[in-house]
Length: 441
Ligand SMILES: Cc1ncc(COP(=O)(O)O)c(C=O)c1O
Image (cartoon, rainbow, N blue to C red; front, top):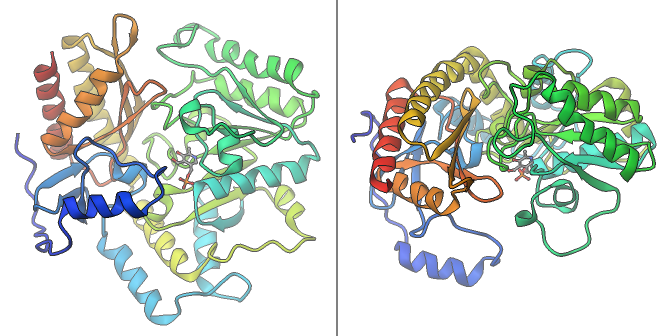
């Protein structure tokens, strides 16, 4: 299988040898920081949807640095915006007036339905979730927070307390007031998604958790519109509507964690929550927002945001001129080039190909997601096929295709490429999947 042609020539790599670097990394970095692959990947150059390793081998990047590179590696317009800002002023914090933060916040706010319009910039998804929880508590005067089992919301104290996956939690006491409701699942959940009223039924879990596990009053319900780390898990169409209703009835606000689903990636709408016909009170975003630059944001209503006034709140790099220049350039490209529409086009092509493979290879239990946030779950003998998925993941890399892996049992291949993927790239991905399925069958 040949990768589609590419006219970018990478510079020869002249840095330290891979084996040397690996040993030094093991010696100096915190042991909690993990590497993917048996033989770690060392990408030293990137251009749009492609990566090159230290030997000059090219890969199609269908994971985007974990759903983060959105408009393309080293997109020339993003790079130009960054260099321009670097040459003017590098650090312009929000305690001074600067055009970049205002102009970008206005553009970002314009992508939301009313009444979502107040923007607070931070640096990472975990930090944004922490801030969203603070806002929810300040606004409601309540304390208790509901999230979903199988969710991922970050690695700081709040993020880890929200997260519903033991593999991402340490054995330290979570912060008080966080509880997890049973979540829908298209393969492992008790109610098939095509059952009439499936979403309403699944959302009863939220009601029960409020009734039996809380004081009856909650500050927030938070959910990813499609669980990402949990293995690309969408919900039944009417689920969030009912889940939000239960949370609001208990005095809580609803938070959408769009860290993976935002910015048109699902293809059908710019924001993942719009796919369910709901409007959250607070939206958290990161990853794609900065095309790889540390940038995240919380967008909410006037009413919720104003509860932040009256105290001094500051974030050194949040809203900084460099991040704003990158964010604005990235969003301008997304809107100008209709990357949402492009995600739909390419995503539909991949889904059709995957569904065809599903008819030929029964180990594919589920093809799910939409646009360029897709998942393929492997199941063998009624159990998650984690070992098979791990082999599949490795073999894809050998063929020059980078994908992700997820789900509690590691049985889901995740496809979340830069949004500039072409039809030829999609066909390459499908050809590699077929070849690897054949090799491993
Ligand atoms: C849905 C979701 N929320 C929050 C986070 C945390 O973001 P960060 O790693 O930028 O702190 C992630 C990261 O994977 C995520 O997928």
